[in-house]
Image 1 (cartoon, rainbow, N blue to C red):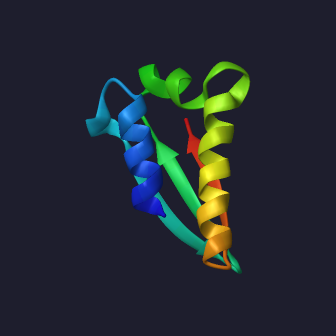
Image 2: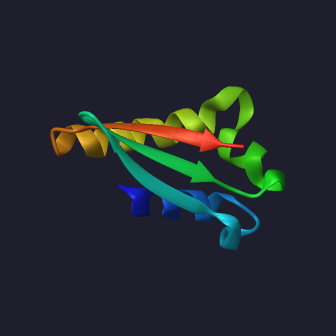
Amino acid sequence: MKTLVESIAKALVDDPTQVIATEEAEEDTLVISLTVAKEDMGRIIGKEGRTAKAIRTILNAVSTKDNKKALLKIVE
């Protein structure tokens, strides 16, 4: 799932070398932290958070298929 989020983010930003995704397991939930360049933060979040919501929707669909929970944190 980390690679999925990372590949989506790299397709959206101007500087894909600054995209870093990390996975952490917290109890029964997989937390994926996404870090991008400061200039690309708006591209990841999108207008009114629509892009971030879309990424979270895709992540939830994949994690539900695997009977897991996943959470996306966008780190500033």
